[in-house]
Image 1 (cartoon, one colour):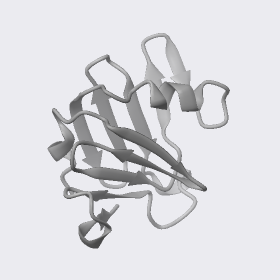
Image 2 (cartoon, helix red, strand yellow; image 1 turned 90 degrees about the horizontal axis):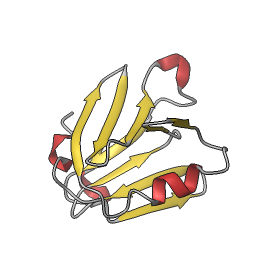
Image 3 (cartoon, helix red, strand yellow; image 1 turned 180 degrees about the horizontal axis):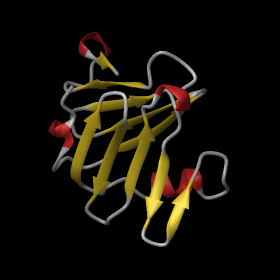
Length: 114
């Protein structure tokens, strides 16, 4: 699956929905069923840590510099401010069969799960 379509896109919204996360860009939507790590220049923040939500919301308005999805390994989204949203896709790190979904159009009708 190719998530590179979000390169150059601005993050418009971060949505926390019960037990998953949605990152909405100009058109595409990235839905994550597992909580990613936020990698900053001075460390990392994991789900449940006090500044986790603030770190994600601080990315609103930032443009994506790079995005890669390596099936069975990892998803990384690097923003122009050098913050990286990283999710392990290794089976031993996941709670379910899917780690997330990507929709190039923002519609759930055409989303592809990974």
